[in-house]
Each structure stands twice: as structure tokens, then as C-alpha cells.
Amino acid sequence: MNCIKTFLLSIMILNCADIKAQDFAGHKWENRLVLILTDQTDNENYRNQIEELIYNLDGVNERKILVYHITPESFKVGLSDEKWQKAETDYTLYKKTDSQPEIILIGLDGGIKLRVNEFLSSQKLFATIDAMPMRRQEMKR
Image 1: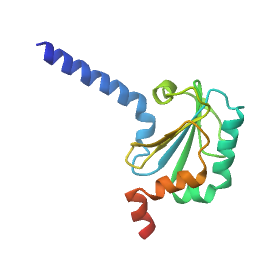
Image 2: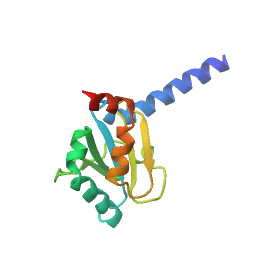
Image 3: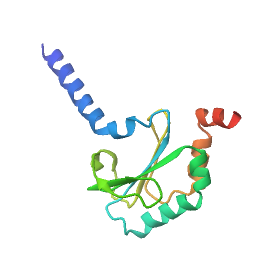
């Protein structure tokens, strides 16, 4: 009986985690996601990271990358002047370190492919994506 209770509790916990992560589920098989998590949007490291991606926008678009900016209270999508929205996702679910910013690459399959706690050059980001089997298929087409 205890095994059944433990099993049911485990399933309930997993379902709760899925509910928090549903914000990104709609992008599965459509976009690769780059999550940029920061406590402060006026942080120089955060701004440098955004500038790096904007400077290499053609490569970002070619690789179907959608950028999410995430703070503890809000988020926005894209690299233009989109408006910030009240956070619908749990910042602490993704943020694992105190570094500012923390960058996470999520592949087309929804799995975390890269997590860095420092500046991520477009070259490294693109090389990571270009080494993935699905991206190699895209490049062949």
C-alpha cells in the first residue's frame, strides 16, 4: 500500500513540474529556445549577452532560436522592444546559480542542451546547435 501511495505522490509531483514548464511546451519541434535568466535587466553582463545575439541575428533566425528573457517577476520573448509580461513561469525552476545572467539552450525536442553561467558567444551557441543531429538534417536540406 505504501508503494502505491509513493507512486501516486511521485506522479502528482511530476505533473506539477510539467504545469510550470508548459510555457515552453508549445515551442517543441518548432523552435530552439535560449532562456536568459537574470535578476536585473540593467546588469552589464545581461546587456552584453543581448547585444551579442542581436549582432548575430541572421544566425539566430537561421537556427530557429527564440529568446526568452526571464526575471523573477516578468518575462519577454524576442530580441526587439517587446513588452515585459508578468511572469507565468517559475524563475526558480530554471535558475540554478547566482551568476548573472544564466543562459540555457533548449533543443527542438524540449531537452536542455546547454547551460552556462557566463557570457555565451554566438559562435559557441551556433556550434553547439550545428552539432545536433536535427540541425545537421536541416543544413542538408
